[in-house]
Each structure stands twice: as structure tokens, then as C-alpha cells.
Amino acid sequence: MSHPDHQPGAIHVFVYGTLRAGEANDLRVAAAKRGIPAPELLGAATLHGCLYDFGAYPGLVLDPTGTAVRGDVYRIDAALVPVLDEIEEVYPGGDALFLRENHAVMLGSEFVDCIVYPVSAQHIAGRPVIAGGDWVAHRLARV
Image (tube, rainbow, N blue to C red; front, side, top):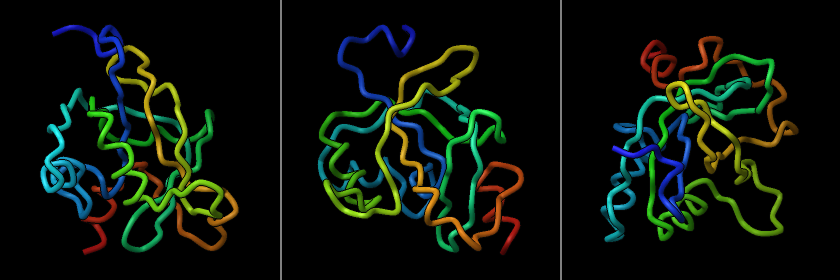
């Protein structure tokens, strides 16, 4: 298998919360429901920041000195990007909770440029921190 960056035009996304496999907004299910080619899981990855508990979902504030937040990197079809924007309620010119940004994410021992949906830091006041940096483990521990 070739390195993910070696495919021209490849789009990668780092998912750390409800878009992860088996979670409420599993991006594979979202793609299948809309007839979009299935996202290809490239593997577990990390991005540094602070993960916050918003109840039904987490929010990531990026911080290079923060915790290694666990997630997964997928190679996706371009048609899935507007669907992810809709799930994350990212709209041009809106005062959205989530933002769509591109960041270098550590996949194995290499960095991959990924779409990431962090939250705006102005929305984290009073939200509990997810100390371990893993939404799925945190969610399962709450039950």
C-alpha cells in the first residue's frame, strides 16, 4: 500500500468523536446512506490539543503542547466533505461551534495533511476536559 500522501488529490480527514467507526455519526454510514464511495481507514492517529465533553459529542481545541487526542484518519471522496460539514454544522459566515481546518496529523510515524473539525475555544467555558484524549473510551466509561 502506498503512503497516503502519494495519491494526487487524495483528501484525508481526522475524526476524533462521533464520526469514528461505530459512533453516532459514523462517517462510513453517512457515506453509504448518500451513495458516496466508502471512506478508507488508514489507521489510528493523534493530534495534540484538549478534548472537551459536550455531552453527546466531544470538542477538540488544538494545542501543540496538549494531550495526544486519539482518532482515526480516513481517505475520503470529495463528495463526503459537504456531508461532514453538514453533520458538524459548519456553514460559511456562521458562528459555528465546529470549524473546518487543515492540520498535519500524526499517522504512525508520518504526518498526513487532514481536514479536522475542532471547536472554537469561545465555546468551551464550563465543559469538562476529557483527560485521556480518547472520546470513545471516555463515552464508554460514563455509561
